[in-house]
Length: 155
Image 1 (cartoon, rainbow, N blue to C red):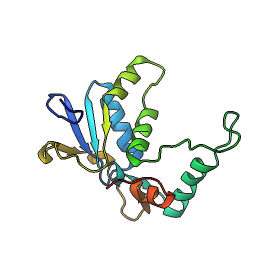
Image 2: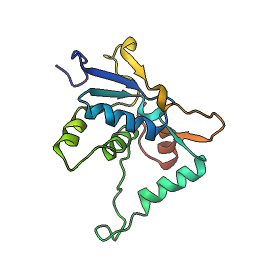
Image 3: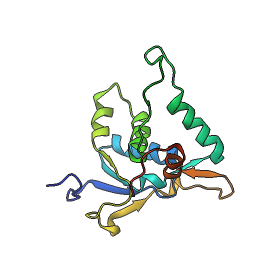
Image 4: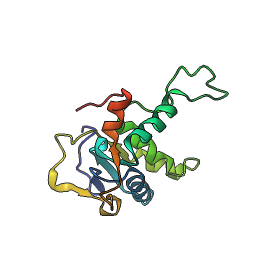
């Protein structure tokens, strides 16, 4: 049995294309804590609201200028270099990590760039609560952000 097989009954496949990253992550975290196994597809198409230049500068600073007691030389990245792993880390931030309940929930999450071949299109659901409500608000997708920052975007 492969890692991407979707034969179990309680597996939910969620498409986050056009969803706001924080809202989608919080909804997915709540469902993981209820015991669902969730597969997230199109992680590179999730939206970060805000002016693209400002969002890019914010994440560039977090990636390159992280200075702390443990990292005084600023020589290693502290953020994931792929959009799917970054989105998975955002969901992890919304789980109670110091309890085994949160860690078990995190193990039930899989995130993919694009849609894998073995996932049927009729099984995919969207999260309507996470959609961008005002189309006039500027935004940038996670894939565009990683292209601007020089990260890896696999297509």
